[in-house]
Image (cartoon, rainbow, N blue to C red):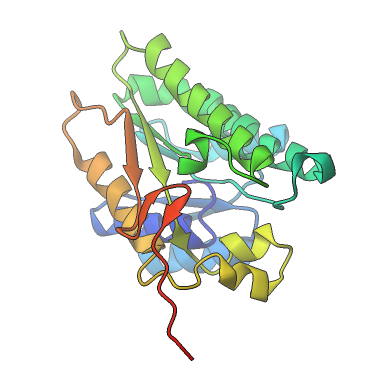
Length: 242
């Protein structure tokens, strides 16, 4: 389980542990994953998916019977128009969401195939199409979706399942805050007036369910949004009159 230090990753680790999985909680922040692993009876591992040596060390410590990989590590940075985009941030997003997920997948793939395993890519409805200020993040998530889709085609004759979970609006402690460089006011506006955006536990439940399915069932893509969000650009917002 990559990106397990907070948000959807931590919630998914808890949900899987509740179903009896031994979860390896992997992320860059050692204190976070150690606390989570202690809480759920899992294993903590410090992992930077953008670092080849870190991924190799992570893979080497895993048991031969590993049978589920959740590629959750990812990030969204900035929302500037293309003309003003911070391309260093774009490179970080691509390195984490696309290259990182692919690198971890490559490292574990032989064991996952041998164990009739599963791979979950945590993409996003941002992969469905562009929106103003979203070119970098939409592009990274679309590329990650293409990795999952190509892998599904390439491995169709092998006993391994490839799943793409695409959340819409999810309110977590860090996602929007990180995207806006710690600007809490801008981050809060993302969810302003939305009665019930998804929370991390909602998305975690979809992964828990997918992981519980018989091994002939492949959830190629699952889109999950709050009721108030009909599409990436269509959100019901209700504001109280002053």
